[in-house]
Image 1 (cartoon, rainbow, N blue to C red):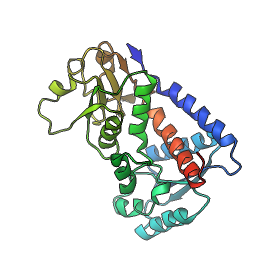
Image 2 (cartoon, rainbow, N blue to C red; image 1 turned 45 degrees about the vertical axis):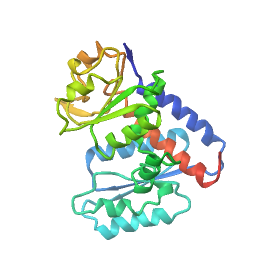
Image 3 (tube, helix red, strand yellow; image 1 turned 90 degrees about the vertical axis):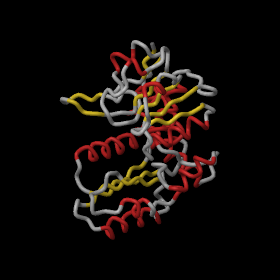
Length: 279
């Protein structure tokens, strides 16, 4: 059984990104907008800023108070959208309940949408056209390749159908020529389907949901879940039992997690290179 090390791949990719940026006189710039002081969001935003500086990217963070109005949030995003020096924009979610997130996100130009959430980027991904694709599922696919696992022709099962992970993961795996099945809360007898998977991607937000009896011998298991239980972080897969059966598996933490910010850096670099016509 192979443990797929997300930290190692992330470090490798970041050093490649840094090497590229070194040669650019104008540095790629990522702007992050955060509304309120949610502690988890604050840590994540701080980590994004740190990752940017590590690779030589410029990072701009705009923090608005929790009670900021819709118009105030939209004004900040609109200003960043119009700023030629900003190459990527990310609005930290979730936004406070009184803010219409869709209206805010729609103000991010497609070419600066480094989260890959805009309808245009999602549509281009579905059509197999050049796009900025969602960071976490892109990172998951990179990990499968890094583990040396052949995706083409394999049966990939995605558990979870969120717009952020499940659906884009399924599209990206289809693009790699896998045969893809998507399971969700209304799927009858999930175990019967997950047991057929050569590649199993799990993103349901339920701690230790996938157990050994639901996994095929030798399968590659990608655990996207992050759940906190008694101060410990655990995934959606019962790592202890499943790792004894899987051919390769991502740990939590240290698997998909480090890849999300790395793919964000990669998307920002792609947005920058596209803007300036760099191949």
